Image 1 (cartoon, rainbow, N blue to C red):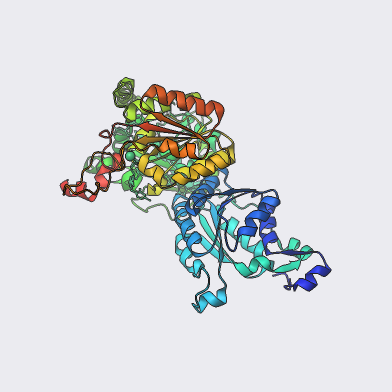
Image 2: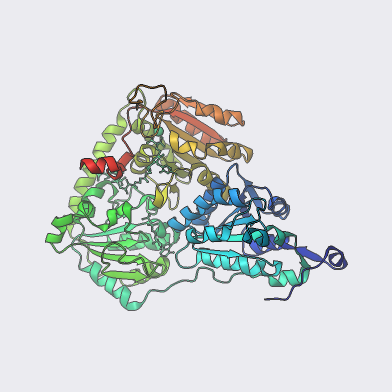
Length: 582
Ligand code: OXT
Ligand code: ADP
Ligand code: MG
């Protein structure tokens, strides 16, 4: 540790001095971090002001959870940790859900919270916003650190960056007590205490024998399948991943946030035959995807169950940076541990011109299922019922995204999520940002703000009316920063549907029902944005086209048939009541 004694105000006046506020800003900037998502207040108000004065972008939110979600998705988009800055106790807790969600999703972010004085907190003497934040954050973060002395700020930020980015990315908590910010130190000594992190996400080269094992298994497959997950999207190895899929000619299935890694219209995409390929595939190569609930844990009916056992069961290859991921749910026959860029490059190097084409029968069977499903979907999308339903509205969104493949698509809800995922094709990597591993509501406006701020591209947010409510106040933030965000609310008057009634006949509404015909568009108008009430696909199309063309903050209140949704969207089977019925 460099010896930097804390100076009194009088001493500081003698030579050039710096302080904790400045060192935090300098340490972030030195590491190429130019944006802070946060919410000001004691003790970090001046940190936000001075960061802005120092040329950083400071995006100030209305609730810390949304700032945290913005930081997390900025991390996913850029492979630099997104920074969320909050005040102590309540502000910290508001940011914590986003931190835990980032860790769960393997997104790199750093939650920096101001905190109360250690001496008072530890004796529980009732300080302003007293809370032992470090202890609370630790189990929910990949790592958690506290800095007590200004001379350690450089180390603290460096450790946080390394922890967030290296290996499996995740959320990191950095605790900065109020007193730290005002500590004054010699400017030169302060400068030299900062660390520019060298190679924060070191490549992890897979072992040669592990690559060979994976290739051998894949080569012998009769019905091979590749599953691309959001880890593959995060890795930014887009060209090699596409080359691997195309050279091997193996059908692939994109997980939700891996859509667009190859265009969804790619002939090898098996997305439209999902329920056929999962149980039928004999060798499955997972690239940056976990065998968690979204993949039915790699077992049971979705995966062929007893039927698959009869022909020897499925074999798995798993490409992942975490050595502990393999065997978490089922046996992994060929774990390939390393960063996806290096692993995919090594696999490609082992696939020469003699690589066998997957059996024609397998490809033909998939094509048949796929064509059937796509034809069915095309027929449904062509209908124009009154009132508008999810399909007729999404037919419009699908066209708009096809015409604007550079636009980001943020998506949350239940039916609003599930229908959008299967209907709206994505054409470019990392453009679809959604509820992720937890299926969490509330990511919508935070993700939309970050996507627009980080990329400058237009953002379309398709939101269930319930989902929107979790972060809806951030439309003010969208207007304040003049962001090119078009929020489309699929307003079906409630959670899943708008038709539920109170069984007692009492005056309280059913728990899932909202105010009917609510005018969310007025909320956007309140802050100077464009609000549109759309009851037909034509109105929705016009509004979305205008929003993309003008780049004005827009909210389209798209009225959807309140009877159209199903309980929990596509995951009805996870409801305890449905499980009991089975
Ligand atoms: O193969 P089959 O025949 O099966 O068909 C599949 C594909 O082959 C086919 N397909 C295609 N066909 C043709 N063409 C193309 N291109 C094509 N592509 C696919 O379509 C089907 C479906 O394909 P898919 O989607 O790939 O397959 P499937 O089987 O669905 O995949 C399984 C899963 C598990 C991978 C998938 O379903 C998935 O990713 N699911 C994620 C689900 C999820 O995360 N849901 C969100 C959580 S629900 C619930 O928890 C909610 N809450 C509670 C709550 C939460 N979450 N958070 C917090 C903080 N508090 C509370 C709440 C409050 S949702 C919710 C609000 C809901 O109300 P809203 O108003 O917001 O929303 P509405 O419902 O709209 O009212
Ligand atoms: P999905 O929900 O799309 O299936 P998951 O979040 O379950 O994706 O899985 C992502 C996986 O990707 C995690 O197991 C994580 O360890 C892994 N991962 C993330 N980044 C990399 C990387 N650069 N290289 C290798 N694996 C990675
Ligand atoms: Mg709804």
